[in-house]
Image 1 (tube, helix red, strand yellow):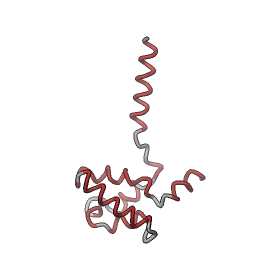
Image 2: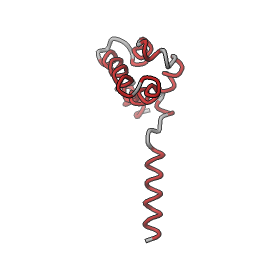
Image 3: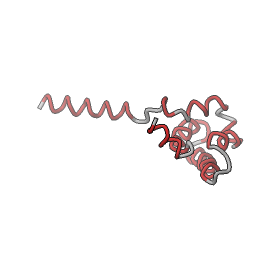
Length: 99
């Protein structure tokens, strides 16, 4: 519960990079980043919740509907680079075991 409260303090913007990643194939990294940053600013200014600010941006809403945005903003489904970290840790362990 405490972790969730801390995430909510970021007005949802902690998962902005996840939205950028979902938009990059359609918009390119630079434009996706700019669009999401504009929505972050709206949320930080207290004008609207981050999810709403994302949906209101035409370039974003053309590629991600409200349901997709809601799912992408759910921190329970986001593991970030955890698979890479696990693979790296296992590979390092195997190298040490062979040495």
